[in-house]
Image (tube, rainbow, N blue to C red; front, side, top):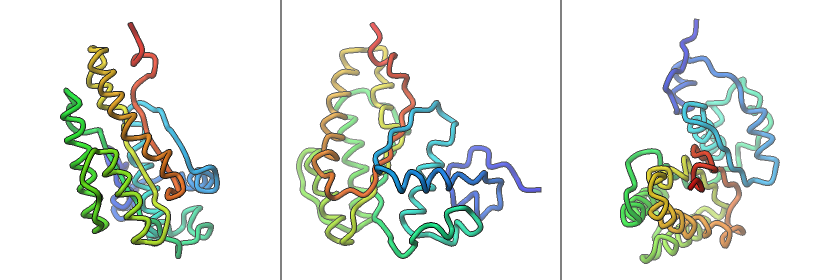
Length: 201
């Protein structure tokens, strides 16, 4: 009997470890054929991070992980896309400075992963430069995956003024994607905060 993948958020670990996996690739294929801009709101432990990781494996062309699954013979695995993945689930964000520091750290990780040179400046400028440099290197539109994009706001939910400052910082960062739409193949963002809680009081 196969083991249950309790607490496992990495698709390759589930497949390689022969854990139970309920095939979600029919839904994933629908998403890939759609508009390519998605926003998923679910509580923690509902499989959001695993879904992001599964999307990463599809776009990076790791077909061997999908043997026997729905998408196996329905996706062009010769088309591989550079993936930029950001995760705000870890740590606590107590100010805009700590937020900017974390974003810069994650931008550096992606820059090193793809071995591209990026503009030094604000987080928005660096993000814009990262998207363009990555697209130019691979000659392929980029995929952007962001997990718990609202976590920095949630950390300050009891301090409305501070939450508003954090929100503006995130807005400046995320707005880059709108301006770089021509360089982007797919965007998927997850959120855990109930929107009404952000605007309460």
